[in-house]
Length: 317
Image (cartoon, rainbow, N blue to C red):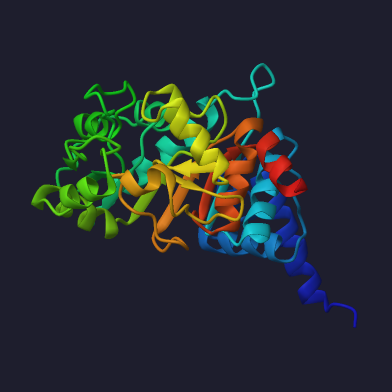
C-alpha cells in the first residue's frame, strides 16, 4: 500500500531533520528555527528518521572491526561482556590498550554511588590498569586482593595492585598477608583459618567485580618468572596438564582446576567454576591464547578484555 500524503510528508520532514542534525551538524534548537517547529517536534522527527532507517551510518574506523569481534566473542563463548581493542602492530603483546579499558571499567565501577566490592588479581596488566585510574575519593568502597604478592622467601613483587588502587581512590583495602604458596597443604589449611585471612576470602566471595590477568604455562610463565614457583614446580604443573592460571590457580585445557601440584598449597582466593560474579580477564598475546581459551571453555571467566589478534585467534579455534 502506498503511503498517504500525510505519511509521506511526515517522512520527508523526518528525513530533512535527520540530514540537518546528523550530516550538517546543526543543533536541535537551530533545526527547530529552520523548520519553524518546536524543539520537541525536532526530537520526534530525528528519532523517526532513525527508526525508519531514512538515514544510516557506516563506521569507517578500525574500532568497527573490534566491536564486531567483541560481539562474536560474546555469542561464541556466552560472555556477559567483552571488549576488543586494536592490536598494536609494533608489538603483539603490548598491553596498553587492554590496560586502558580495564582502568575505565574500574573507574566506572568505583564511581558508583552505591558501595561496591572490587576484587583484583595482580601482575603486569593489572598494575598497568591501576596506574591509569584517576585519583578519586571513594571511602565507601572496598578493594580486596585475590592473590598475595609475596613469594616463599618473603620478598614482594613490583606488581601489587590493591595497595596502589587504594592509594588512588581512598577506598578501604584488604590485601592477602600470606605468601602465595605455603610449605604444605596442611600449613595452608591452617593459615586460611586465621581471622584476617578468612575475612579477606569472605569479602572476595561477595565481590561485585573480579578483575584478573591470565597466565600461560610455559617457560615464560609469570608464576615462575616472578619467583612464585620453582622450575621443578612449573614442570610438574605442565606434566599434570596445566595450560594456564588465574591468580595462581592452575587449570587444564578444558578449564578444570588441577587437583594437585601447587594448587594444594596456594593461598589465593578460590575461583568459583563456573564464575558467578562478574569475572573479567584482561589478557592478550599469542602465548596466552591456549590459557584464555581454556578459561573460556571452563567458564572460569564470564568477561574478557583483549585485542583484535587474540580475539581472531580464539574465534578460529
